[in-house]
Image (cartoon, rainbow, N blue to C red; front, side, top):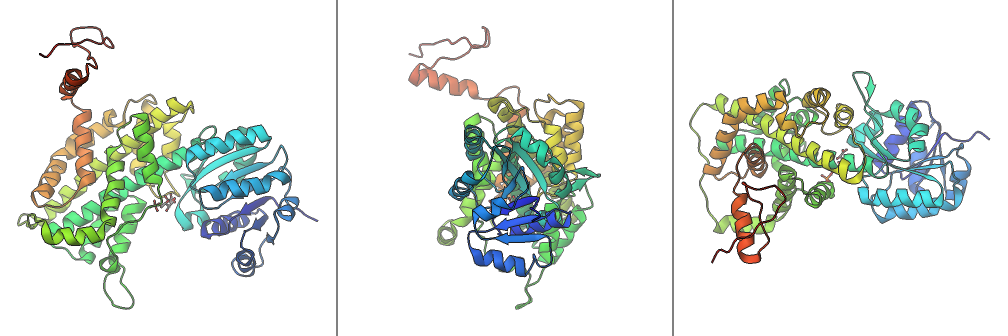
Length: 470
Ligand code: 6PG
């Protein structure tokens, strides 16, 4: 009996779509799901008359895979992944490859990768971005882990991934959890991008009293500019969409309480661990937390007061100001994300390639954007760049757009409109470009109460000095 090219466990929508993508590209797939009815339903429905076969025991599933076995796990990140791996282990051999395609925490992937070497099989963690549609039509893929696994899987992954200028949006990121790490940072940037867009929407809505359709037109126009990106495109579409029951814009019916599955928080936590400022990403996570305190906010809105937004100047000028500010702040969030990748690469000894990372994010993934071409250019010119902000293109935009950006932040503050990501981005920019910062006083205070020592401007660096304050 003919065996199957690839196995996939976990028939959630992402798993199902990835199976259909692989099948459409000429591969035969064996599928397994813990809940049998889900497998039956998939085979009867979306998997009907396709080169896909459902199995109902792990043993049978693994016996029906071509050697070396290539098994995708598309199960919810966490202990479920460990459970499936331990169910598979008795049935796999040393050439086989287990591929975790979920949003797993990179430290878990590191651990699973080390365990696979001890147990003598191959393990890969692949970050997959693009949501349900991406999985079906071609996602951006960030594979990491076993090098042999990558060499074996390369053709399949290239085939099923999205393409940018005919090149696959897929490339080997590095050993162990490197692929999942890059996906985590992708999501951190995704949080920042989304928050900056949401703040732009809110600022314009409040300052200019605009309706959703008018706001939609603004975002659609921005899509024709350097801001061109998937997230700007869907924002334009979201803002024109109408609820079929009430006829009202759906955006006005959606409760203002944001959820999160944790990848943005992981990025912020890891950045704190590594000592890299990623304030825009962190503020975006915090903004979701604050939004989720809806009940408290409802109470507080009756007790705490602020200014009522008002604006009587030129409407089109304010729209243009917001566009320029958004682009500058967005570039800063990329700078933070790539700065984190640089430090992580050294810390974990991964040799991450920033140009390659930007190039596989150009299509298929949620943060796909025209601006990624600028990042590729920057790293092509200098792949040791300290920070994207000092690349000539970035410097040019920040110079040009900063008056508008400062104006937006000041106006929002004056009018009581919360713009945490915009102002965190500006503080990052101002801090990063400052020759002088008040950290001398921090050092003096630490010395005063704890004799922690300080470096002196007139002596060798890394030499600690003390002073008797009284
Ligand atoms: C992607 C998305 C995807 C998912 C997020 C949502 O790249 O395809 O990032 O992974 O939609 O995990 O994350 P939150 O629930 O945390 O917003």
